[in-house]
Image (tube, rainbow, N blue to C red; front, side, top):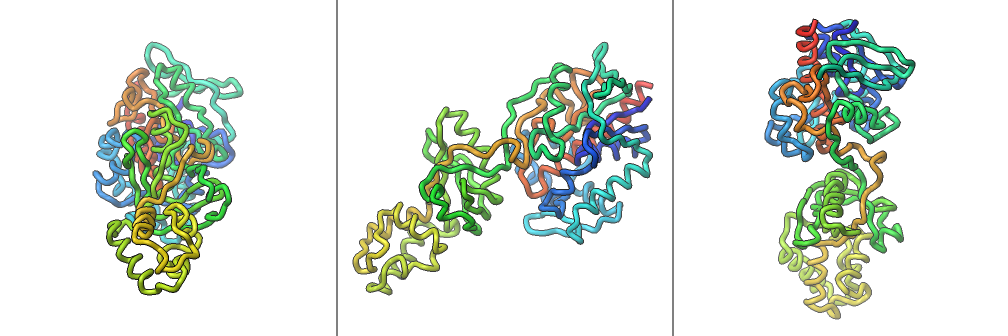
Length: 423
């Protein structure tokens, strides 16, 4: 018999296995795939963004899905602990923009290998290609794990780290939700987060902006009722053949879904502020100076360099400006409209790509039914949850993986303690 069984070999499950074994438990790690750490190996574009080095409050702010729950797990194992843990395994880390931490050699595979070597040194038994069919409970506690071949594996504690529904080729196919429901847990509504946004605008359908990147702009999701931004993110984005992606596109995606649902609308307005450092008046004065300085030049030619070349025609169209008109033929009012468009370039979002195409799953096992200091179920003793199977999610940029490692370590150390007490 094992003390602790961990289901799922992703970031949370691997860290849970490490923590449980470090705390003296005999650990069995089960994964239905043939390889562990697949999500970790592709994270950060294959470079593995292991955490983010911002302070605790900033970390919480970057976890829009129940971030406040994370105060307790961070008190057990936070981003600085994650950094120290990997450096103790010989993985040298470096800090990049916005606090993102990467291995110096930019190789995610080395992070996975170091973690696997660590759990093997701690005698964790690993069984890949082992699918879990069910969990069994008796008298208010977890008793055993049933595998697909009908074997019953008993344990003092079971940690469910089976992931969400996103990036299914890594093994995250929602397996943990039925087991949690059987234990009496609420599964909050699942939805994609950190996912590209789909748009219906004509200049998207024509693909004239496909591949165009915008640097340091502000993207806002507009509340359909109040007609003002309910969420704004600043940074980089890219136009695709179906809509927008890139860091701020991904970050705004969940709010598109939430606004559609809340207001029961088919589409949600977005605005891009192309010059977030300047006021509309500043932009207008800049346009006036350029256009009035070249009165005989066509406005579209005079303004080249102010906006990316491909963005200028739709911007002028939206402002009602005649592209071939010269500076002297363009009114002050038209320039004012153009400045307004540059500060609030309008887009129409009808949704996002599917949850399978998302980087992260929103929703999951309700955090109200889990003890945050232990990650243990309030409903079944000895049952623990960690990572994306829970209703916890952070933005990309090292935040989501920080949640996985922190909840994984917290669950693993507490599960070892519970298993020891049950012997």
